[in-house]
Length: 215
Image 1 (cartoon, one colour):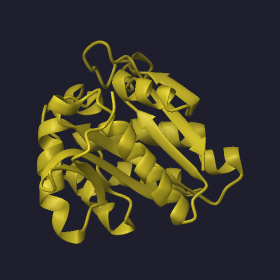
Image 2: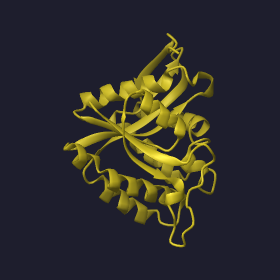
Image 3: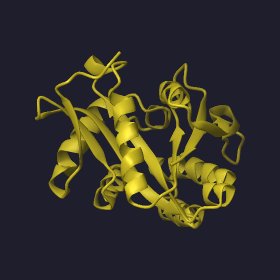
Image 4: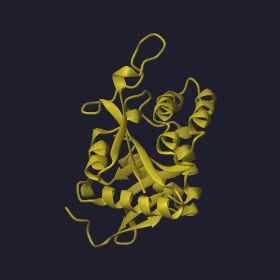
């Protein structure tokens, strides 16, 4: 379906952080497989602070209906070849927390994908989160946000857009948009030292797929 004519996309400003997080708490975190599959059910403060920390990079977006109502949000930020090392430091800092467990999985994915080396580029734009109001899902809002962040990434000099799709629904979106699948890890393959599965999201979410596209 086509996007409604009364929906516009704009970059998240410094004063938009609280509204963006409020929207994501309602329309992203409640269903996000990494969040709901790892106890406790609510996201850690460090998780929310990480999303907010991306705003100054100028690549976070909100979709507005009628000029005021937020109906979609996308959080993205740049990374370079040292991202895995940076994430490893963050895992140590948040050891024993829910955010630390989630970061451990993301760090493993970062090391195994290594997109800067894979594509021979100095940097990439990484999509961290996408949330859409349920009343407007399957109407092209998510695709509109992804296309908008592609343009932003390109304008900032990045040659690659990449995202780890923890949800089967977001993975289908990236497939439809023609992104390349470069990595997959099943949740039941991510185990703690005793061999127990760390993150247990509900069906149909059984893996994280990483997608990328050259810009």
